[in-house]
Image (tube, rainbow, N blue to C red; front, side, top):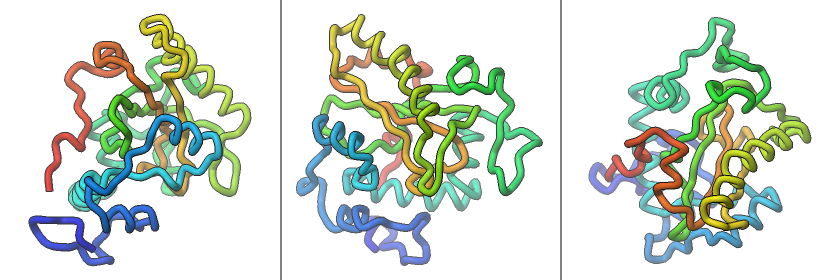
Length: 229
């Protein structure tokens, strides 16, 4: 599996996570052959809940695989890295292997207290056309999901919708006048690269960097900008 141009291909058993058919196809092509997701396509994928079709630029996917393998070797898991280096959140003593990381929070209702969530750039965004920004909202309280895939319950969907409208849709509309600039989704559990820490994906279209900077810490840079093959 050719994912490391300097050190040679990784063997199947060395891959840090199972590759999907979409991943394998993307590894077989170049960036020049790749077709980035358009805004219209993203809206359709999210509306139809076909989240498994989301894909990364081939070069980004290769770097993501390389970075994931190195990070797991150093930290034990991507989740441990995110908690320690990105969020600086410590799991509660209530956490168990079965529960995964639980966090002490100010309010059990998701998004109710700003100290219980954090907005950051997605370290490894999907392969999007120019002008689309990919953010992540990390949460300490967990959102309700239903089996078998881990889709949001009706109540949890309404909680996310209300938060996204208040914190993204309305400010973007006031600052830019745009009415079709924000969409969101939450991956099913089986698709999450960091299972155990709840997070919601927010996509912004044609929103300037100075507006985006209002949502995350000054100087934050996606990890993909810091990793090379």
